[in-house]
Image (cartoon, rainbow over all chains, first blue to last red; front, side, top):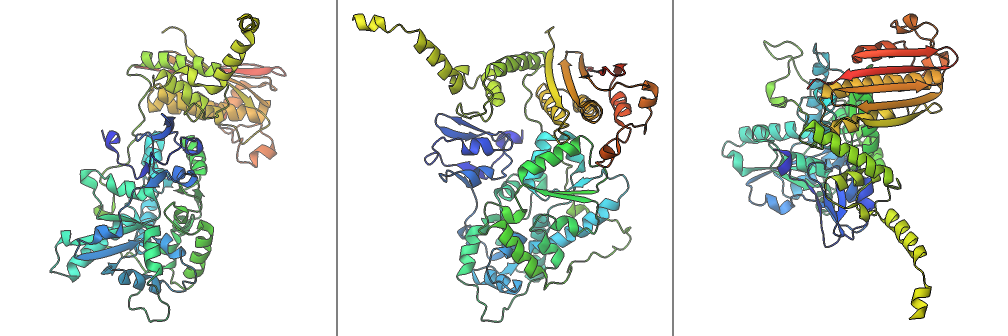
Length: 437
Length: 142
């Protein structure tokens, strides 16, 4: 099973975890429990959204990513900057300085993800016009959202855009370009590094099935690259390397960018994982059917809000708006391919497999067993205080009742009920018995 | 197992934005029971439409969902105005929702027909001025 071995980027440093309930209560998929004094993440439920990293006051939650030094063995190093990187810098007036900076820290080539984003936009426009497509189409660019849908929203899997993400298209195009321009290079001498704003992209790359590997070799943290760039970026020189992004591609860094690039007003763009869940609930009920495109980003403000970024997402967004003003609309145009109709989408830009529903395990192997367990859950839940205090180590009273029935904890771990019981016992003790002795 | 699992939900008539919450909760429980996606979808659509109806017309009410091994029964009970003409109410596009509601995008006259289309049985008991009780059944074929 793919799920059992899912290799998450979001991890726990047990030595730093104090067993508080900050992450427990913020996890949107109830994947965290506090057991034995430390947080524990259920890999089958975690979507790598990074909310727990954001709220952990003890720095015990962190994202696993590759360090820049991982690239050392590669002969030819290619950087794939996510467009959110462009919003991190104060006083950056021209993207060329940043592209130049990436060369200065050791990259031989830079392929902007925003460039590939423009290609994805162009293919999405074609896809929306294809007859028989399930509308509204839901963006699959945010891997936390795609994973959430495949775990919880079976009815929506076929609405997910089957086109690969800008990161993947950029990696493939970058490798092709490098091999064509440098005939002496072999593919494994080329190291392609995505500069990621979030742990979800890292997990996405590290967990591809055999038939769906990306061309990304290394996933770097945006903050590490940011600090490396700070020391070398110079505005007093004429940059030697140039950005090839347009307004539309760079716009993908913020919520609404992917949607507005489609020039189709029948869209909804939402961000923040709680809002995303609410929109998905509505979509699954069949409301919002008048829309054609749904853009959902797990992080507030979009990719600029990823936990590996440095700058506040709204400040980054304002800078991006300013930078975009000086760019042409788009620099990647699709031409009608020879012998193909104008809605043609090449196979290599599509996912090999459609998104499929991978539900969390049902309560029992048989329906009778599940019914029996559910009845026990309801009985236990009815006895609980419904405070959702989290002191028992489960995020809600409801999930605690489920954990009791699964045999993971015992009901006496409910601190609120236990305290009431002890108070009751204390009242019944006759202190005169002690005085006699 | 002979006793059904019973879920009761109070539908708050004051609050339009919370309509659909019971439907989401039912969906979650049915999923944990391992029921098929088709069953879950039908129950949740019928529930959702019923909830909205009770909010629009009856100032809320009560929804009871009973899960039996062979069927799921949904009972929607309200103390609303009642339905004077059921045949008319069952027609697609017929609606008595006030303009205020329509301006919110509801009241298209598809609620009851959609509930009927998604369930195997639907029974409406209604008395004008007293209230309405709708009993819907979705059969589970295993």
